[in-house]
Length: 210
Image (cartoon, rainbow, N blue to C red; front, top):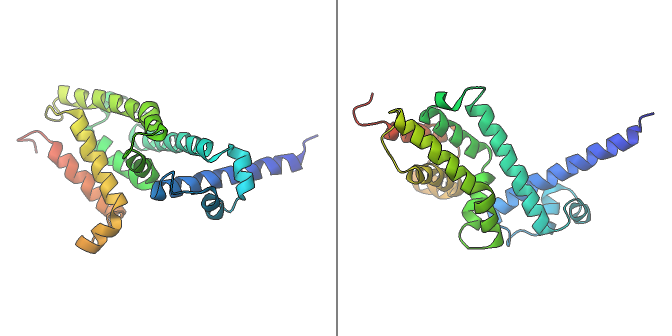
């Protein structure tokens, strides 16, 4: 006989865990690890500090779990937007750039947390670099080289392009209040991010290409 109460409690625990992960990602993205307390995460998530610690063990363990959860969500969103069953050799650089900016807008913590933590050499920046970004750099390098080989873009240093794309998204999303005040633009809007993606795509076309 199924224990319906047990199933309900499991669902409640999972919902609480997700609330803590979502709240911690948002707070870590705005205030960094050092500037975020478990009390703040509890207040934002609506889950007691005691329960949050019970679920994740410590603030450090929560940060690591949150990062795994965040990058897994980003990978799933990116795959859904970009590949949709298509092989890699059918993906254009334009497809890639447009999908990337959409993902950044949907998951701003994905670029804001590395931006904040990357300022200093800490266990957190090393984890981000070694566990996630080094793999992204390698895969993007291979993709850009393949696009250049088939003549879709000019020969370009992949890391320069990666910084052009990622750096632009970081600045527009992280410094949105400054852009609003100085240029009168909402740089987090879907329209603005899409227009920026198209600008990057146009810049990547080989000389003379239409």
